[in-house]
Length: 420
Image (cartoon, rainbow, N blue to C red; front, side, top):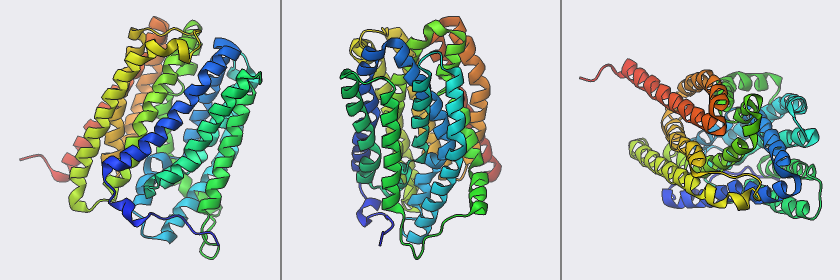
């Protein structure tokens, strides 16, 4: 009989440095895995093939945001505070899984159609890449993160990504058509979901499969977080599509900068993954100190990642993009600076707003970012191509962080009164 995964006792008090190192290695491997395939894609299909894959992945990532339903943001916290109750953990997993499956059944066909309509070339590649990336929304990594079980993240998240990149690269260099790469992605993501389900399905005697009413309730409860994630995606993920509409000549360069920035963002998530459950799982008296530590560590990581992107991208562009796309230091820096602001927003949301039950602030600030960011992106790309679009992303991230902080201060003042 299957047993539901719970946290191992030592994981609750495991030192934060060890937690970060464990999750960092896994997330770094997952983030670097797609870069392994870039030389194979660009050498076999050129800049147009590379742009098609990135466009499909961009659209699919937007679908994944909807399918994930905000669990990537609040799920680890929800699991961390329920680690001593297997029944409640089982309810969280089953509700999230069935709700996301219902959403995926609607969203993935829609994003596939959109991908087909907007694809400038390699339409089948764009469609399949979109569907494959959309399946990421069914991930259970947030659940394993909440338990502090980095080994399970490796098994169900890292290994499939690495396998797709390595096998796909070898196959592309051996003559496989480009369309085979997104097909491999779909197979790997479906397999990861199935294997995680086998691991987490729990005991049949206590298993509660949510019905239509429970699914509808979950959708309503998570609707704000879905809106927030989609709003954020308007100036991040959809940025490639927006740039393509006003500055097609800049698409390949911007797609390259965006892909490297995605790597930078991914390198920040190990800190959030490791430290969010550490902050939420601590005793009440320890939480303020843990919060400060988590914020400082995450922001410091953002600075280091930004410097790394600005310095290394121009040095390695010939290898990563097979000489088809050249990235200058100024171009890389324009995109890299935004990673510092991203790290601040990530820390503020994960360690302060979510544990405090203030997800409404996240929704409001990200919607404000979408309202400002989309026109800024269009104007920036039209004005200065890839660099202009990169600066627009930076300004938008500043708007999001600033508005969230102001709203938080106003809410604190409302409930505590003005400082004496």
